[in-house]
Length: 210
Image 1 (cartoon, rainbow, N blue to C red):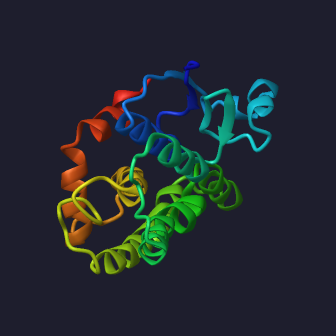
Image 2 (image 1 turned 90 degrees about the vertical axis):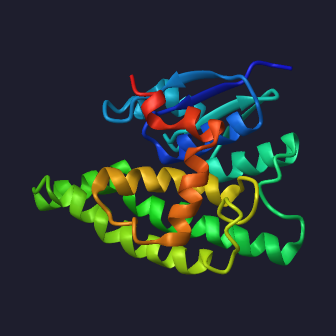
C-alpha cells in the first residue's frame, strides 16, 4: 500500500477531523504542516495540491483528495469505519446533524472570514466577538438535534460517528473563543466520551502544535 500523506494545519478544524478518522482507521500517515497564518496555503506549491488553497489535502491509495467531508466519506467506504448507518433515512439524519456544524458553523468561523471581519472594522476584538456570535447559536441548535438520540455514550451510539468527528473540532474552537457550551448536556456527554478515546486524544491540536 502506498504511503499516506496529510497536508494540514494544527488548528484547522477540517484537518482535525481527518486526523481523528485516520486514527480511527489505524492508518499510519506522514504529516506535512501548511502554516495558514503565514499564508503557506497560498503558495504555488500548495495551490498545485489544491487550487482552492485549503487544507487538508490527503494523498492516499494513489489519489490526491481535498475537502474534508469528501475525504471522510472515502475513508469510511474504503476502510469500513462505520461513520454513518446504512439505512438511508437514519443516514440522512446523521449527516444533517454533522453538517449543522461542518457546513453551517465552520465556514463562517474560519480563519480568513474572521480576519476579514477584523480588516473591515479595524478592531482586533471583533475576531472573538464574531466567533461567539456564530458558534453559540449553532451549537444550541446542534444540541436540540442531538437530543433525538440516546446517549450511549457517543453522539449517536456506542461508537464514534461522523457526528463526533465534526463535533470535537468545533468544541475546540468554542473553548478557544469563549463560546459557552458547557450548559448543553447531550453535547457535553458526547464530548466526554470522545475525550476519553485514544483516536481523538492523538488528533487534538495540542498534540500537533509546532
